[in-house]
Image: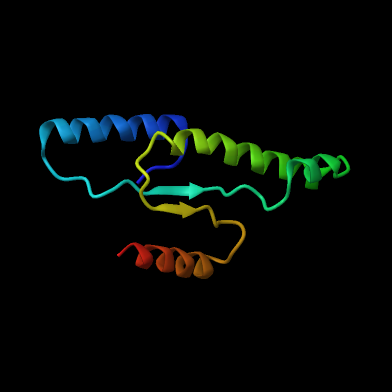
Length: 105
């Protein structure tokens, strides 16, 4: 499991290479966690939003999601778990992640 950020992805790729080279175990997959989806709002709509916290939050979110895509491309296309914390209760997060994980089985 890794998160789509530079250091985490580089360390994961290094670990995969080491495990493959030593043939200690077979890697079934690499789960990416805390993956942000771009907002369902165009960049133009965000830019047209008046200055303030909503505009800043939209720009930050889409910027982070775009940055993550670079690092997700460096990983195998295995399961990806969305970033849910802060948007749902802990019980809702656990239920949603369980649903996602069951779909991979």
